[in-house]
Length: 328
Image (cartoon, rainbow, N blue to C red; front, side):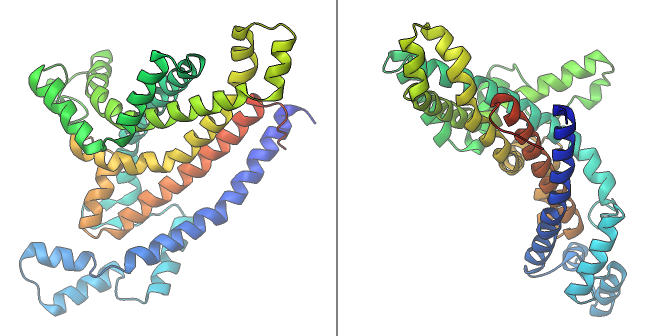
């Protein structure tokens, strides 16, 4: 069996294994969200100013909230199997359509953040490791420590104050200038211009994490026997670093990048709120206060599926970075 067939068989098996995991997450999230006091009807009644108990009961019957929780769960699971995520009471539209509309801005923000954080994290960690105990190592270590300890919301606010309000280099909020009616490449440039500050804000924390991890992983590899053997054979430090050490040092960084996908979605809630970025994070924040449980469950379902998929991709990448790892 060739390598491609092994990978396809492995991917199929992992996808099947992911189904019960996602199912368990759905059930857990459903009961956790329903533990909180109140429901969407209470929110709607509060916004209306007044509502009779009879009218509230009619609304609960209309939305299916008058049934016992196990029955509501079974109905929801049945709908999920048919890709029906329910209806958003707050936005008055199907949850699936709403999530699809908001997913692409979040995906754009997440991909940009991962590329920036992982790319520069690897480079800075590598530079710190090869420059151990020098001023470069000290500067990179201090930078990583500061950015790791700084709250995301404060970084976002300072970015707006400095680069938007003082210098006027970037817009303060939003994903694009709707009033400008940009099309084609002009619209791409406008979105990219709005994307700069949210991406930098969200990536700084993860950049520090990957920098510290890459540095530690490189130093650990330098102390192993195969590096001592390579030096004894007369290999140059450049060849040892880039041909042998770097590939092995990347393994924990790649693992952490896969694990952090779920945390990225959580971090995007803060960043999207600060910059009014119209993504899933801001949508989840709004739906939480509106008690729009169908929408929250849909967002959590997509997030869990995304984490399972990314970790599957990481496992496949592992097999290319380390030939000793067999999949299939």
